[in-house]
Amino acid sequence: AQKITQTQPGMFVQEKEAVTLDCTYDTSDPSYGLFWYKQPSSGEMIFLIYQGSYDQQNATEGRYSLNFQKARKSANLVISASQLGDSAMYFCAMREDRSGATNKLIFGTGTLLAVQP
Amino acid sequence: GAVVSQHPSWVICKSGTSVKIECRSLDFQATTMFWYRQFPKQSLMLMATSNEGSKATYEQGVEKDKFLINHASLTLSTLTVTSAHPEDSSFYICNGAKVAGNTEAFFGQGTRLTVV
Image (cartoon, rainbow over all chains, first blue to last red; front, side):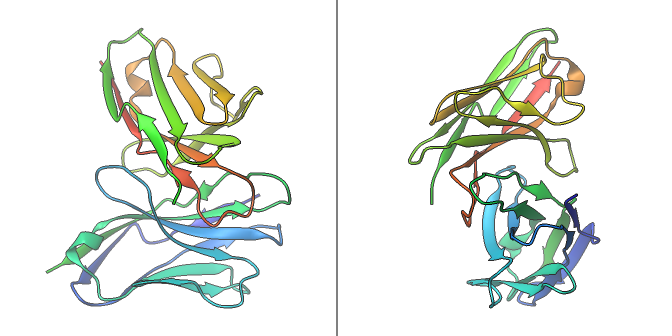
């Protein structure tokens, strides 16, 4: 069965510093996708970054990068140069990508990030 | 990116009444719509999966007669909370998907339901 684990319930980071949010996963499917979402207090789910299981390079999107270590089954999110607006809940999610099917996202428990001035 | 429009964004209703939440995919055809529920300070939990033109598949522990899901077209899916009770108060959010392999899953804005 799929499982996503986020071991950090909360994190503090100083403005302009980098922060790493941990995520480990478990799946028996060889084809899967890993996602990170940001959820501010308004509730909307903001897509940040995606990593496919067959991607050779770590995904990057602006200040977000995903440290993908397939053998360790980890997909940590790195936010560089933190900004006050980065304060939010962050969710790691996984989707098993079976051919021809649309598959559900399984979410971790989330990490609440607080950026301090 | 593609847009899923979810309405209402918040709703308060009296216990025993029903509430309908709509999700529309505005610029793509959502062959599948996933419905999630999120209690305060918790993660998103999948309630059900609906495919256009067929019955929804509910996750274990989710009452299908209480949470009615209709996916009559490729652009509209609805969730109706029937005979709502205070314990149904939660954040409900939909997630539209085209086909497997998309690098992004498209979420609605969410609906905060409060039952009094």
